[in-house]
Length: 214
Image (tube, rainbow, N blue to C red):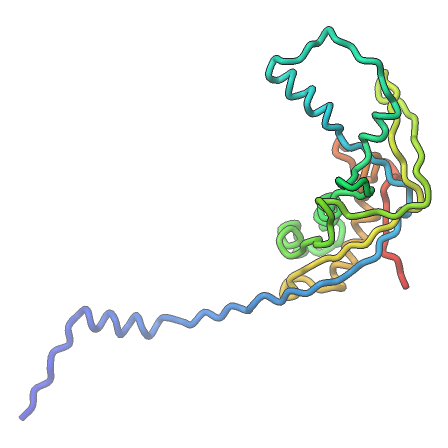
């Protein structure tokens, strides 16, 4: 006659644990790339903060500045320094500005699940040079205007265009979604100074863009 071996409590818990454990299956990344041709609908105004200005701010903060020393204003140099350029002198605009415009435009598309967090994580602009998307334009001029009691000279680019090469996770966003979002970004947000949605809450008509249709 055989006798059954008693089952220990620890062994029973292990068996129960095995029964309730579920296999988690994660979908692998589905990285794709789309190239979009952008054309400016309105002139683009650039207002890059010059390195000299940044140095002066730092000097004031560290107590090293000479507030009594005044320099003769060089408006030509001011205008040139306000333009975003690569180390080789090519004109461009920060890729981060285009992505930020897309992120800000998510609130306009009419879909609550199409969130800022989704766009922030699911897309990358991968064709920038030193952080800049290179621009083409037909003409560069200077817009003279007043900011308070000061006269400002802002570089302005007419008939501008560029190319955005966007890498994205196709599991969470489609190429069609991106195309639609870029057009929303160009209409509602824009890039540069005096764009439809500015940092200070003001608005203008500059820096608008749209997808160039073949």
